[in-house]
Length: 434
View (spheres, rainbow, N blue to C red):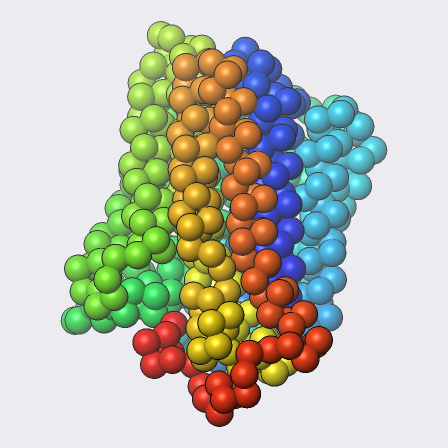
């Protein structure tokens, strides 16, 4: 199931890039235009949310030690969320209110299915910051989805007027109180494994990061929705504390890592850098809004993209670790004992490292171009960012699937490597830790 979510996230990223190319001119005049909103939802719902939901279904049983309530529920959640995440941006972009309304219903159903499936494992006591993060993220997902349903209802029936501040509040909730908190919590389990890092002593920055990020996002979103400056600045301050603790936790793991620098480390560090960029752009936008409204709005839009870049860069980077980990187990269970060279199959055999480096380049440059294009109101840069995001989705999907499919086909055809390698049935010690 996690592979299905991640494959759908790649397709969503391709659609997101295409949508940004389509919205390049509208984004420079009105960041809340329908085409721009459609591109944003392809990025947040069809890409980030799909990827995070895949991680949630994969790591919740690992972190809690309890299985999901039902695999069938997980599959149904995938189908329902896939429909919602594509119908919503398509309905908004092409002004089809019926399609938009249907997407809202699907999103609510998907939320209920997700909550019911995760309720059993997340009821476990203890387990620290990762479990707390998943519980809070579920609340954040509920708040984001319900606010999104209100947004859909307004477009369907024009019951009331939703200002741009309410749209921004929904974006803050989704980006930080749901998706961001999930990543922060799961990272507390992934970083020690992937970096071979053991942080000694009482390491509480992870807990501060989870609670600070969630509470800060909730307070900030409430202030934005009701136009309360005190709540806005107070929530922003708490959010900075939470995200700062997340960066402090990353620094602690980097200091105590025993694995040499690799591409995964570059993805993670670059993702963290996008948080700093987002903070700088958001502060500049907030200070400029009273006197230079258009420039302030443009910088705030760029800040939200940079915040999304934090999660997207991390998602793509961790996918190059998690997908081979899952696929390795599947291939071994199906009788693939060795890699292309005839040696025991390793995680590194399951994707091309040169193409992975190219993927890092496209996602980093694409996010930078999109931020620059929105901040400077420059359509060519926005279009370039869209093209690079599309290339990232294609490269990641092709690179992480081509070799596993080839190995699986070879085994089914009976043309696998010599049987001498089949006597080694366990993964290499150097990779066992991941």
